[in-house]
Length: 161
Image 1 (cartoon, rainbow, N blue to C red):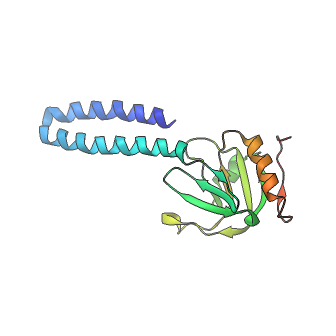
Image 2 (image 1 turned 30 degrees about the vertical axis):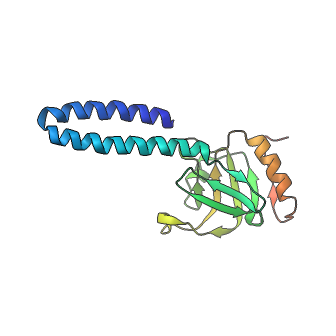
Image 3 (image 1 turned 135 degrees about the vertical axis):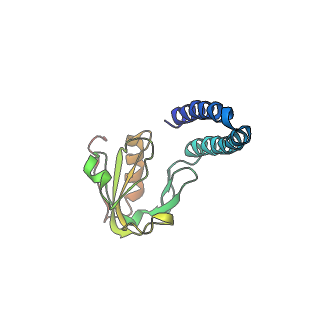
């Protein structure tokens, strides 16, 4: 999806550049400079999603969305994990949807709400996390193994062995 967005951006920027260059060479040069910076930033963002994935660490679940966010959720804060993702629950205000370009395939419920960080502080605290992992079955299996030390956490996954 990111590469498709990049390709569409290239086409759009080229067409707009050609149109603007008919009226003002200076404006076209300024737009080219801004467009170049924007494209380099977009390429960096796309690469960061691959280079900074979600991790299961010794302390908890490290949720990362490329360079956009990095947050550690302790295992003791997790209450419920499921692979059945309902559209209403993903769009609900207390849900933090970390799957930007794709539909989430794992939902994590928390024991207590956690405050939002960054510019979304005005939104209410979240107590559900929607995320997208490449292969949910091994992720859930490893998460179960890590959460075995926390008896309060209830794990259920509809499609995992």
